[in-house]
Figure 1 (cartoon, rainbow, N blue to C red):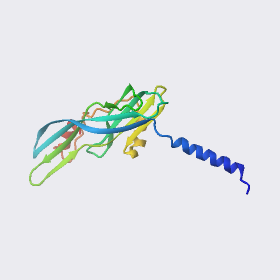
Figure 2 (figure 1 turned 180 degrees about the vertical axis):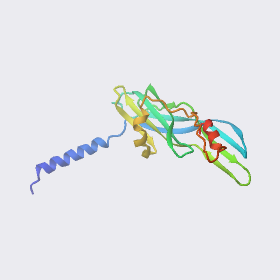
Figure 3 (figure 1 turned 180 degrees about the horizontal axis):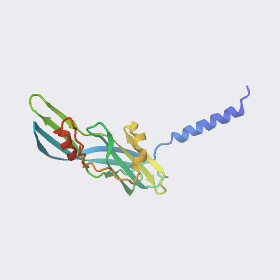
Length: 201
């Protein structure tokens, strides 16, 4: 039976492309968000009750290992940690970069700058209590070689990639997490949210 040369050529092109995509990353990358300090709780008096604010200082620990000896170990590591704030919005809480040399097979560890995660517990009596909290949603790590080419990446969770890939190497700083928001609710001028906004929520 004769074989169509065009079909054979197409098969080899598709197979070769698949092999290229299947090439392993030049770096093993993992990350852990760790609590480094638990600050003393703060209490705020409200007209009809009180609020207790808990604050944890955290860092992203990044673990790297170069697995490909043909790839240069002189790299720049970019990272970003995303949180869900009390309004349900996903936003970066910290980002940074560091140029380092990663030797083949030798574990290398980096840490991000510390960032604060806050929780507010409301107690207005009579069963009228509640909670507002910031939550770490995930992190991203991208590694570039000296030419600016990507040689490794990790997005946890993977679904975060489309939202943060362009932002992580952007030179713009993360918005100040302490920036106040002084807008008041006209229906309730004593809304405790207006005071908590000044606490970084």
